[in-house]
Image (cartoon, rainbow, N blue to C red; front, top):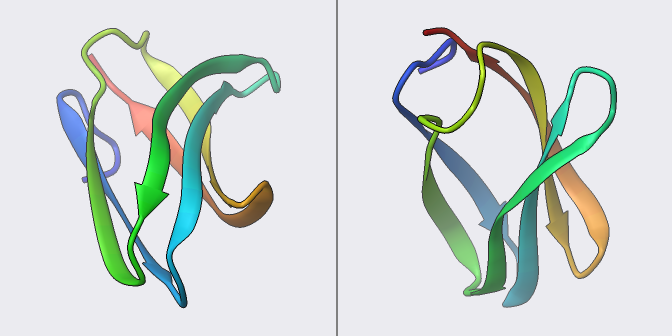
Length: 79
């Protein structure tokens, strides 16, 4: 769910196996964390991410495949 105060799920489709990186940035554009980094298979993939260590606020989640951005999601964290 968005906004969230616990965990959230990121779902994305890949046409082929790829090296995926999911990176979180704050509203000011500062990198907060790399939340996932690894190989993922083709088709639909899902990653569940905890927001417990994040402060209240707005964040942007970048999904990269082989160093190219394939998705951007805005995440609202509430406490």
